[in-house]
Amino acid sequence: MQADNDIDTLIDLNGSIVQQEHGYWVEIHAWRVDSTVLIPHGVRYALTLHEKSGKRVMGYDNAHAVKPTGRFKHAGQVLPYDHKHRHISDKGVSYEFKDAYQLLRDFFADVDQILKETAK
Figure 1 (tube, rainbow, N blue to C red):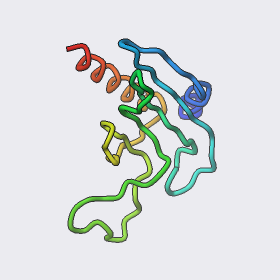
Figure 2: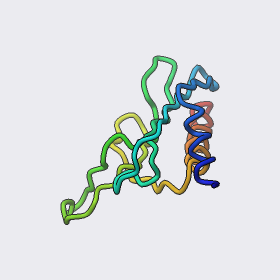
Figure 3: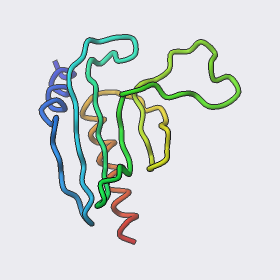
Figure 4: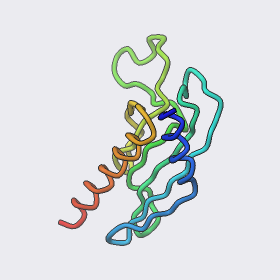
């Protein structure tokens, strides 16, 4: 099944550190968990980009729910767990998890964009 292969590939990357340009690096953590309403794909993950000093610059994860903003922030909805932090101080915005391959593509596209902006 394709979804299982996607998840297996992500899990195989658990603990990986990938060096990037300008002293940045990517760290990947992923492991299986029981599927739940909050984590229906059955995998916990944290994909992060770090600068030379070690500070996290950007990341995708599902370690906690993203609290909604705005007037109706507690209207009985299920809070999303899949999210991304777009910069150091970002508390997180929802991310729509489609499959593990798309997660990796989206994450590395953001990494490439940040490194491109850093090179300017």
